Image 1 (spheres, helix red, strand yellow):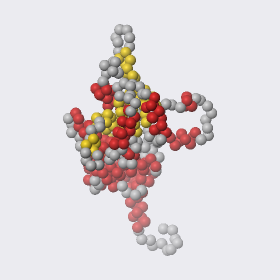
Image 2 (cartoon, rainbow, N blue to C red):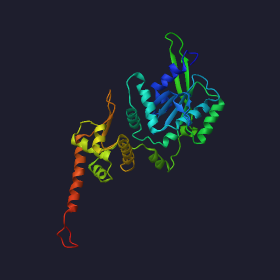
Image 3 (tube, helix red, strand yellow):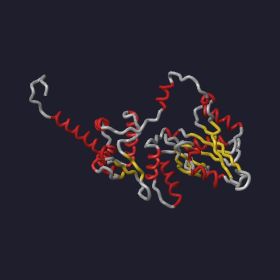
Length: 337
């Protein structure tokens, strides 16, 4: 890249910020050039982290960038940043993301930034998961000591990825500069290129790895959901949206009706994500969520007319059943009512 006149910050870093998939599938950039570190005594540390991302599983991604050949100690530098990054809390992560989003002049609050991170992870940010960031080194080449360290750290349970970036110039008229990005490590196992008999255990393994589908919610599903322990935030969304199908309901209204704080509401929505996966074996909620564009930075929820009718029918049926169960019985003991 240096021979092509490309720089580390103005070119390579900007490509990563615009194309976070360089750091892995489903990565959202949280911040870059982060240097707001403090020791336990409060003394500042001015180390500057190149890029920090967050993947859809709620795992932090430490990106260390080198324009050309990586130095022998680059992995130690990345490990140091991973150690410091592991001390991020959900709140401090939201604050850092808010600064990143506000860099172009539009002020974004920490609460709004947290909402974006929650939406990105389907409300699955786990403070425990933040303690185990994964490392991605991006460079033109890597010395053997770095690749050996990456392999060993991976064997020890540290997620370590090496990404190679190279520049090429085409010849002839209309010369163009091309930049390629490829994953050097982890490499695919040779066995993954082969074709052979399918073992009997493969079906079970595939089922375990299969991503849960999007399945339309039925009347029985809404009835089951209604009978589960109440979650005020979820109940408020369902009731508000079913009363006005197709009309977006903002999260702030949901919090007020459900009498929940912002963090309580987000926690219950995170619980809903786990619930639909474990109990209902799907990945879509019983309503739709969209993030508002422009200056109104909050989530909005809607239900279709069909969904609204099913939810209302489910809650009405439950209410009717409760009233019947509460009626006094005139039938003799042992007689059907």
